[in-house]
Length: 257
Image (cartoon, rainbow, N blue to C red; front, side, top):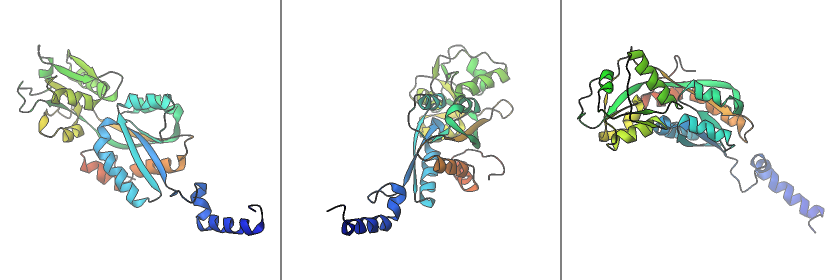
């Protein structure tokens, strides 16, 4: 019978062989923790390589990422959707999510903005001042997302009154509008232009008129893998991760730790 000693001994041996069932996940499980990263859309390409790099060196952890506007990712945490790590494109968005996050926040990357235009720049946009020209279809991020906040800061710093024709949920959505011919120009992150290929060109914004976009990261508290999430956030601020960020055009805090 199952309750007899001769049945209990094989069960104990099986559990021992499984290493106590890979942290009680069962002998059939791999014992791998899957971390869900909720990230700003401008991190789409770089986070894919960061995740792959981390997976190779941390065999018991797998990183998967979902992307959108920073404010959208924060709202998802507010709706109690699953997530282990939050990375936003601005400190304000991260602060709004403070109630859902652990105390340790790390700045992992920096970015800046540029003007995206149609291929060949047919409207002859040469700088920020041209964005105030009548008839030019300009698109920016909504005021609720970091890209929109940064755009407004740039216009204010330049003393410009720009009448944009649309507001988008993220910098990638701004770029998509320009790429699709529904806008003549839009402010996006410099790193976004890598994803545009030949579908868009860019006009630089002078450093003294530009802003620095900051990317903080934090673990979501109370999750199934909070310890692993904290470790991943710490790694995002490492020298190894900095090399990946630099490859995709991001700057990192100096010196990386």
